[in-house]
Length: 638
Image (cartoon, rainbow, N blue to C red; front, side):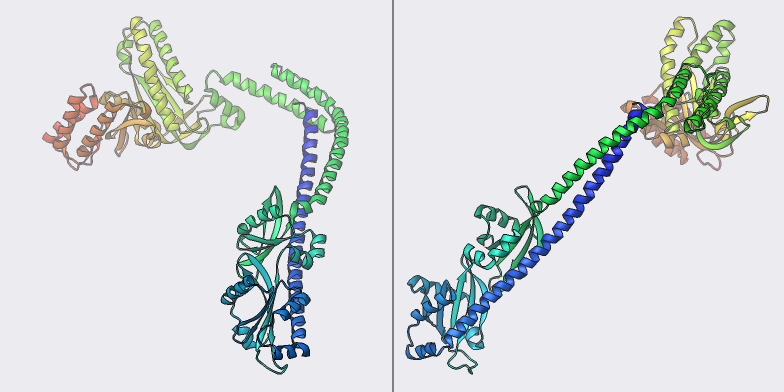
């Protein structure tokens, strides 16, 4: 992508991000504001409903009390003792009651409107559910909302007294108004029309009354169970609703009402505003993009000269220079480019000079940090590998120098390929020997595991080349490899006139000794305990022995590297497990038992030299018990 396109794209991303954030925060603030508004509106509607219901009930109570205190009614009540059905009808008409009943102090029904057997049966059920004795004893009026079956009523109780000064009642009058759609419309009609609030009355999960179409109301009632608090929200037909629930007091605790408002519908004006902001923002972005393109074209022209210069660099022309004398940022960039070309020339000379003598990774490190050319080194943990051809001195004496050199070059070249292929750093050739190391900053990953993998690959490659060399008349070549892990000094060693980038230290010497131990044990690869600890999850190796090599004062465990775990079979596992049991008894000084175990392994694995050697050693120690035995075999030769 060209620079102009990048700047234009950056401008678009910036404006788009700014516009997106604006719309996001606007939407969030608008939604939060509207949720708060609707919640307050629902709370206000709830208080208004409660106030109107209370006023309605107070009005009915006052109306009934006025009628029952009238002299005509009191005279009527004194003359007619058995039947008040006609009077309940009069009160029902005045109070707009759906059901009106009158009881005496028993309490027994003295009159009910409408007057029919069905209502008298209804009253008996009502009396069993709602005892009237408290009303008669208290002598004061009260009001409730009650549920009878699948119907909800607003009920007002008015006591009947013979005298205004009496504290007790001789009867009671009950006026019930059924809560249905018509009742809701009369009580809250104007309020609900202006606010758009949906109100539903329910008993349990049954819809009783609402100001909303029945199908929609049923769907809203289903959401009631999900509202765990007094105020909550639910989703209906893809729209979000804010809801508030209220429950009536006893005895109708299973009944209540639900108020809800459509949040998404309330947000429609804000959505229109958001769309207008989006259109305006897109217009501003388009106009800004045109201006940005004009500005970018004027900026890019001088930079094209730098592009031409970089093209020369890619073609290897480090003599190219840019002549641009402006003092602006492009001019400063041109000067920096010229300085860079001078540095590239210098580093190229270094690469050409040292590339043939040092590993490419070391050359790259020196180019990145020329101070590393100075004498000195750093102490760090690394893994060292020594490799040597078995019996090289013996067969080299009988070979013509040119043929020997050809064979040696083939061998060293093949082994070096396997080393470097696994991030190994070739330190030097030691005649027929190889010294290599793994470690930071040249090696990425587990340097001990990489060294083990490289050693196995070297032996595998040598096994592939051996038949070819034998056919050419070369001797049967085998290699011994030793690997050690630990701290060593890495850096430039030597003098101002002659230096070598290498590593030294006790670990390096130990690695060389491990390579030599292969000759004694008849093995191909021996690794140190530290190497085994770092690579044991991936390699198959046996605890070969505990040895004190020449030059060390203490003994260390050594391991015979046999292969990778993923490639090992049951035979290797059996040998490792059996050898582990035998070496354990050997270290404890039980040479008799250890000898028996090694003898069994020797018979099962006749080609395995370590089993035979350890068996012979156990026989020797049985006849010549060592003093102060610590399980360590002291080597007298390198």
